[in-house]
Length: 380
Image (cartoon, rainbow, N blue to C red; front, side):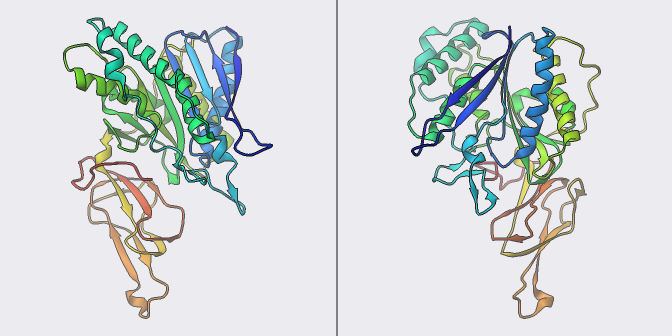
């Protein structure tokens, strides 16, 4: 099937303005497997858009050769709202400045109303149950309406992705190593994604608690499985992953080419594109619990002075950073130490050097669950 490009209007929030989503569609609609890939729902995370750019170029060539075997949907700019938010020369793409909050938190729960919609139609055939559940989700989304731009963005992205077998949500961190988030049900079966992308950390959980975009597709099936227990076979079904393409300043063609090829080979391995992806690269890490990630936060405001680099391995008690109070009367007492509370890899750190109390400083991937890590497990 020839590639299709779709333009989806998000309506107008003020006279004379209108934003839209641009969607690249490959393969036959309804073909299996289906992959949905989007970039930069946090609109200031540009490396994800660079990866999408290079992936689309590869997919265009594959389409010309007739090698698309499944259905692939790519949205290279998932958030044109945030892309336009520039205040006094500073791009603010993480949160909606109209008051809607973090663009990747608080997405509607796709499990809502699902039990009542599917219970009478489920049976002993797992494959048919998956189709019934997807049909119910699609019917609910088709019946929803949104007036404002941000809710409409969410609805349109949901409609593009709800029936996919694979949902990849592409992001980046501040200063960071390549890393991904996966659900426990897809580890180690999702290790091919970690290996292809060269991830240095894989964070695992059943539910992050942040109601992020891609997680809602997996959770709809997981919550149904927990609700019905052994009454009906309901497999996890949707491999969902947040992929963090290093840090915000890692925007280079050579990295983008590498990332595009990695995603392309992953799709080949998953049966969406014909051809031999070659040997799987060596897996560079093991999966670690998201509950074991130490999100260090500044205890006070001041100048941030690091004692570790991204990629360092630290031990519990090691000095990670100090916060310096430049207004301390006694500068010999101006420093507040921040020490690691777990052994692990320094995956990311804050690029700002003047921080406020409570701001995230660094993330350390530890192997053991941390007792204080309860409730929402993601940083805002």
